[in-house]
Amino acid sequence: MSEDSNIYIAGHRGMAGSAIYRKLIEKGYTNFVLRTSKELDLTVQADVEQFFNKEKPDIVILAAAKVGGIMANIQSPAVFLYDNLMIQNNIINSAYKNGVKKLVFLGSSCIYPRECPQPMKEEYLLDGKVEPTNEGYAIAKIAGIKLCEMYNRQYGTDYISIMPCNLYGIGDSFDLVRSHVVAATIRKFHEAKINNSPTVTIWGTGKARRELLFVDDMADACVYLMESYSGNDFFNVGTGSDVSITDLSLIVKDIVGYEGELVYDKTKPDGMPQKLMDCSKLTENGWKYQTELRDGIAKTYQWYIDNYERFN
Image 1 (tube, rainbow, N blue to C red):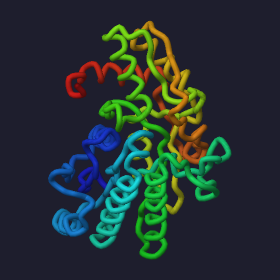
Image 2: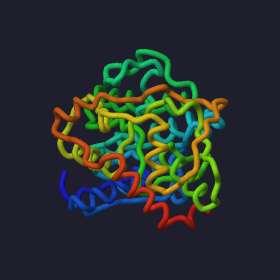
Image 3: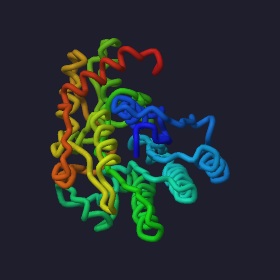
Image 4: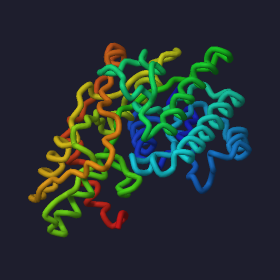
């Protein structure tokens, strides 16, 4: 591949896709083909096939997905399963039919079993049942990994998969139903601060632990593997350390400058008890994250402040 390779980023306006787009530009890539979800519905096979037939991309980054937090996954499990299966199947198959030279599929740490040994190694995939609160999303992502593997085996394609831990950062969604844990926590504490609320409610017990990666670091790993790896392994991408929801809340509380108290709604689910990934395989391949959690949250909060009107 070269800097003028024709690159299609599916989901280029989402948090992950936009970070990858920024990283590719920073690395000197210049030739992109992009479509918004209004311009191209990735769940419609005929439309995706027509797009690939016309544009003939050399490289595909599959960052498009139906995403959301615990509440969204609980409320719409069929949508999360169906939409993600359709997006993946349409893009991966069209990439094969149109001779795409390299495809990078973005999965998720939720692919691993709920009771998975910690830290989670790539080899633990399919060793047990996934977390029920995001089962639809997890099954779709597992299918995406396996589809890439099997196209490689059968057709000799060069499709690779990366499994990021929980992402946060610039471009995140701060919708209280759809957002993930960092964005939701930032918004809760910011609004509690400006409204002088005496308490902020945390879902569950606060004991669940999450590994959190600044999205620009994920993008760096994505481009690194795109440029350096070919094979049928998939890679965990993370920091190798995690934090409890309570400790995360205290970090956000301090950065926001909120002075009230935390209360816990234990009628709400914790989700998976722990999601710490073993990232040694990627480290051995020469990549390591750069952004520490507190610094990343501070950058994310500043971006939220700068774009606050968009979410209200």
